[in-house]
Image: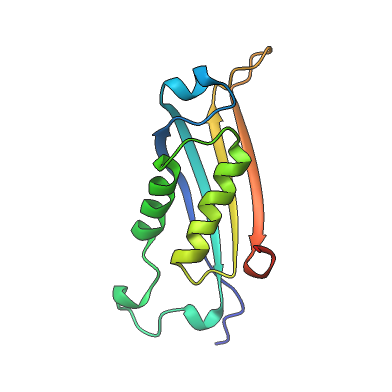
Length: 126
């Protein structure tokens, strides 16, 4: 069997942090939800059924939450790039698709949520 693609997807990684364009947004913690898909070379697929050989989902989720709460960003785009940089630093991913959603953003019209989505390949990162 030849594996052509290998990816890990995490849906609904949640954290509370102080991101936003205005000081009032950054004053109180808000809820953020991240959906992420990491692509890996097929050679990263574990050779056995041993958890020590696989990229640990918990480590990915923890890296996202750690980076998401490490400091304040004005823009969701900046936060998304920061998380992607952390993923490329900590994991052998070849590409990352990330969606960050902020509930109830302050807008002049009622908006339930705002999201930013990035698709970044390791070779395009720099």
